[in-house]
Image (cartoon, rainbow, N blue to C red; front, side, top):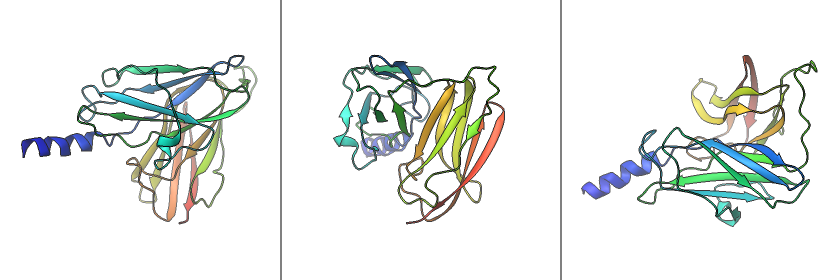
Length: 224
């Protein structure tokens, strides 16, 4: 019985999700660096056991995750709260790639899918601090949305970014992106799922973005 209870508790811990972000390390060799904060093994403490990092030329979902290419050069996760970085090389230049990540504990419980990260291996031209360009957080496309919706972020300089989806009662649905981002543009895709990887129901959702010290809010109508 004790073992069954431990397995149930560990399964709950494995429901934590990870937020990925990326930088283009080398456009000439099509190398992308992925970054995230290590999750815990028990809630936000301890150390998870393994990662499963996948990439593909198509949007990765919970259903097709296993068909995406697995990056096998992964070390065991660092302790909870540690900053993790991995470099994916030998990609095709000028190509749009999709990345997603899962983690597991020592009894084999897998987390929900991370945010879907989209990164082009084309050269991204950043905006310098003196250019006068404004921060950008676009309206969602498509809207209304059935399967996914996407936002474009524009940062004139490196900023701390936090983007999350809420229901109309103000309850947190899912953190879509959180952490430091370099200058340039980013396309962020939401799979219209919650923090446990479950599809959200039909309705209106609020996506709130903090880019540096500026706040933006966008409404997304989800239809099923």
